[in-house]
Length: 225
Image 1 (cartoon, rainbow, N blue to C red):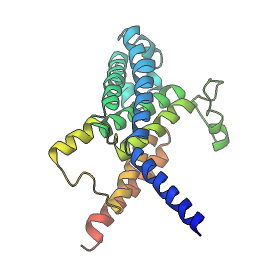
Image 2 (image 1 turned 120 degrees about the vertical axis):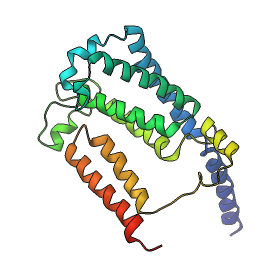
Image 3 (image 1 turned 60 degrees about the vertical axis):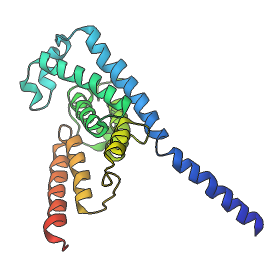
Image 4 (image 1 turned 180 degrees about the vertical axis):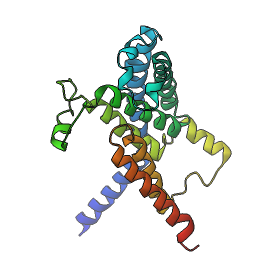
């Protein structure tokens, strides 16, 4: 029994320190790799190539509504500066949720215009596009991974090692750390899902939007307080 008790104490002591590291270290790793990917591999390359949008002009018709009605130069600059500014906000952990959501939208629009298959009739056909190299069925593997990596920053924030956390401590706002597990929480999740799928699978986006509206109605009008 003593061995079991000592083992449990050791496990508790270990996990408590892992939990402490988990308040800043995983978010920091995510922020560093996302900064590199969005700043260097995406935004900075667009900047060095020139902000004339010549490449976007060749795929302008592939952009989803309303971006297909904008000029290619406007879309180019919006994507370039969105990636560069968003990457720096992610790096320093400043306005992290806004930056993460903005980069999710940019990534999903890029997926819809470039990486999504032109047509698919089944999930099996869609799955063929889950690759890095394009063989004619799309290549949305990398942008999907970026979106999944941005989700923790959108929902959990940048972690303790961030300017957001510093600002919240300066303001001494006690409400920032509160967790509300209610219908409105599920409504927000539905809105995020809607934002992701609205340019890719509109039917899922519409279903998510209806779900979100119902959750907000349940939370604010039907649940007694």
